[in-house]
Amino acid sequence: MSVVLDVVAGILLVAGTGFFAAGTLGLLRFPDTLSRLHALTKADNLGLGLLVAGLAIHSGSAWIAAKLVLIWFVSLSVSTTICHLLAREEVRE
Amino acid sequence: MIDPGLDVLVGGGLVWLAWSLLRDPDLVRAAMTFIVFGLLLALAWVRLDAPDIALAEAAIGAGVTGVIVLDAARSLPRPPVRAAWPAAAPAAALAALAGVGVAGAIVAMPDGSPGLAPLVASELGETGVDHGVTAVLLAFRSLDTWMEIAVLLFALIALGTLLRTWAPLPSVPREGQDPLLSWFGRVIAPVAVLGAGFVLWLGTSEPGGAFQAGALLGALVIVLVLSGLASPTGLPPGVLRGLAGVGAAAFVVLAVVGALVEGRFLRTPPGIAGEAIVVVEVAIALSIGLGLAGLALAPRRKPR
Image (cartoon, rainbow over the protein chains, first blue to last red):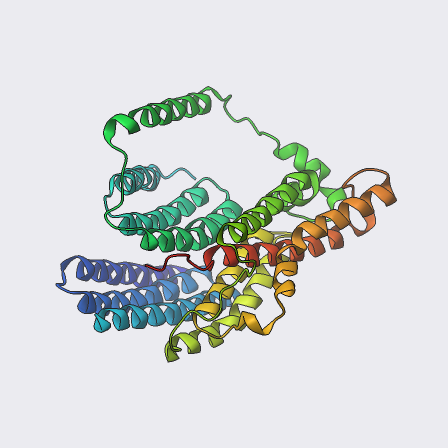
């Protein structure tokens, strides 16, 4: 049973890292600020969610899993606000 | 656990980031690289088994100091004046010498030297806390921590003197409130306060403590002022100044109480040592939070 859990956690972690890599690729390759913001926030938030899920399963403790999910929510709200502020400044110019 | 691949990446990344930010002609971009450097440095501290320093580096070094540096870089005229190579050569030579010296000292250390950890562990019982780092900061070397808080207070006072204003926080800077930023400020405020209290309380037995909690509070104050939710003109000015000084004052009280009760300067009566440390830590966290926020939010003399 624990082997299955480890494999599932491993898959989630690798998938999360893949999303982060995709977001970074978008940051490097997209032509303008707005599309870069779009790639970064969407891909990075989902990547962080997958990482959190994988770590929560790997930790095996509900308390740690709850703390990780709270971190993910805080990170989500921070990144949303920052993306909005950056986009607003970009549109204003 | 030695993981050479990860350590080479982190170490190499640190050197590369430091080099690129020193050579960058764009100061704003260099400031952003500085923030990334701080985060990677926090990772390096984790690899060195020092989670307290990692937390402090991420919160204060990369976080609040990063904000101060970025804001200062944006206020400078562009393009900035940079030292030509002949002027920078002595500095580079000194830095290289210092680096070689430190590396040599590390290589010359005896293998498996335990350092001061056994001494700290043996004296931990008297201090009232269970975590070695907190015990060193607030019991064994509390004088050093007191001086650090005093330095922050002096920096705030010096900045106020330079700007010819005593207000530690500016009046609401934005021309209109951004709805998402206001929402974020409202949502994050209880989380940040709870988080700061949690980290502070955790410092008595696990990595955490007053400095990290103070950085969280400082960041919260910055967000609240920037989102227009905090109106510092509502409070009488003396209150904010007083709160910034409360950390240093707590140490004075501790020193006097120690001298009166135990006959020695800064010696805590062992019965209440744990509680006294927590009270002093709360005072320090408030001081650090308001001090850092005051430094970061200081009004500019010449807006860009």
